[in-house]
Image 1 (cartoon, rainbow, N blue to C red):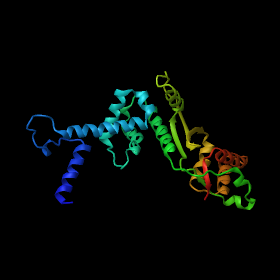
Image 2: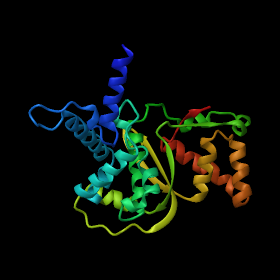
Image 3: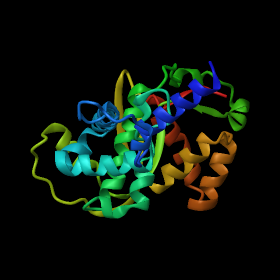
Length: 256
């Protein structure tokens, strides 16, 4: 490929994907019709907006077509797609809305975006085996202190400031649902996939702390010690209880 052709291709791609006046790159039309470049630019931005609708269906329903498209246009301008697959377009939407909160009518919608994206990632996440309870019960007692657990690749632990789960559930079930604004409620939310279905549930601070430590590879003995230090002697027993719930729910994929 010649350097001249490569420069032309780069300029053409930039003219389609970026804002600005690129009419200087165009030859005047002999018939007075608008340049086809405008059609390419419109098609590009329309496809990205469509991808955002697919990735954030509940946000789309909450905002409505007009407001969603306005937010999408601002996002496409600020954060153009840089990935080869359009499936992953929108991963920066929550961060964008944090920087530009005036784009949305309620700050809770940022947490709705976080939840929707995590659910989409869990749905498309990699397949993996799940750890079974009997695999743990067969281990000798002396092995337990050093056990480290491998999370399922679809598992995500989110921190949310608003109780958006009820809004997500209501609008997912009925796009015309009449919903109240979410209440301010700092909490943690777990998202994962089990048996080809996405799952989610809110968790206590204690469980979130333990799971976060587990996800970083802390051994079982350290999980118990940290729980006792923060919550008292009775907390060590709760670690085993949480672990059983995680295993039975399909959140863990195996041992490290």
